Amino acid sequence: MRAFVIKAISILIVALMLFMYQTTAHSYAQMNAAVDELKAELTKQMEQAEANNKEPEYKDGTYRGSGTGYSGELTVEVTVKDGKIAAIEIVSSKDDKAYLELASGLLDEIMASGSADEVAAVSGATLSSKGIIEAMKDALEEAAE
Amino acid sequence: MDKKLFNTTKYLRIVIQIVFFIMMPSAFSSAFAAVKEAAVAISQGGELGFTPFAKIFLFLLAFTMICGRFFCGYACAFGSLGNWIYMISQFIQKKVGKKLPSIPSRTARYLQLIKYVVLLAIVILCFAGFSGMVSESSPWTVFSLLINGKLPTEAMIVGAVILLLILVGMAFRQRFFCQFLCPLGAIFSLLPILPTGRMVRKSEGCIKGCNLCERKCPMDLKLGENEWREGECIQCRICSYGCPKSSISLGMIPRGYGDIVWTVIEAAILMAVLKFVI
Image 1: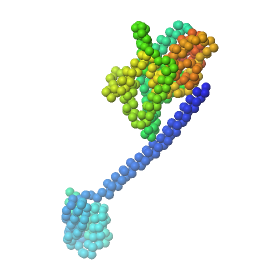
Image 2 (image 1 turned 60 degrees about the vertical axis):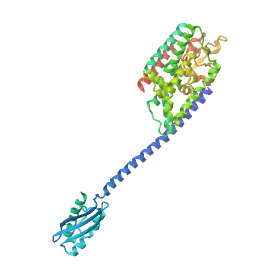
Image 3 (image 1 turned 120 degrees about the vertical axis):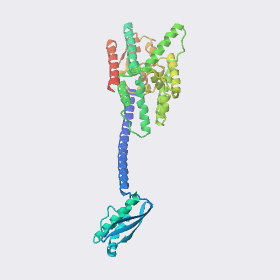
Image 4 (image 1 turned 135 degrees about the horizontal axis):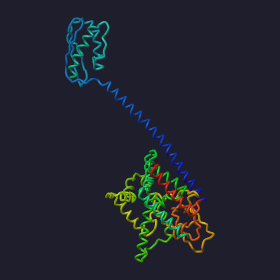
């Protein structure tokens, strides 16, 4: 009888230890799974953000593009260095200097975003702006090829 | 001793053993795989899976606590093999007229402790990340392959040699492997076995100096002598049916045809659960 009781108690202790181990391992595994899930989500988000932020890659060189401003043709010259827009210059335009100056704020915006797609015309110099945007699109299209 | 009853139980046992040998020759290694699996899982800090191995193992633990080591005595293919090799060996010894040297009971009882070392070694090796080595050098793996008609690979040479040595040992002593080496048996013999699964001897009517039960016992048990060693009993019932005074019986089941029916029920439960439920 004594041996039976001692054996039974030992078995219970072993079973209890295994049970405790199992619950710990289970919560640990669940925690790990949650962490993995978060990690996966984060990587996905980061990849997406990276894809969004990625500026369109341009080939190095100097490109000209033209558009129609307030009073006729407008030409810009874009310099691409290391795949990014390094400088923009308005080469020729028939528009008034005042309008051009007002609209040339766009150039910094385009430089920063790397694209002329999502810039809005400057109010007060709408047509000059449109000419610049058009010319920029033209030049960058060439640069993108 | 009732000769007719003795022979009935003897042949019943052989039939049950053959059926289990054919139907589930690797039940023992599947059950023990659960232990290795658990050791590996714990060493990696992982969860213990409720795998088919674990199910077989847990079922056998529960079954053994209620019915005793019936699995060892009747269902384990390796145990049956031990019985048969010993039988053949005895037959040849009789024919030739020479006897192989036998291991004295006292020595055997010490040798029985080796199986705990085997169990501990396997668990430690699995824990330390050598589970591949363990299954490659396991005689059970080689045996399972041979039974299924496949030849062991070169990597299993250690297992094959151990198996060969065990087969030789089986010729010398009945239940050589079960008694001295079996790690699953080591676990079983540590289980608290309920009165329903224990052989009980009423020694009042014993013939002085008979000791037949002790001499016939394949596990070198002295019934009622040491409660700690009762886990060694494999429920073969040779003592029960060999006893000239019929004073040994299993737990609460009356000795005789009731016990024979119970034996068949036990075998049916084992077979049904291992084969169809798990």
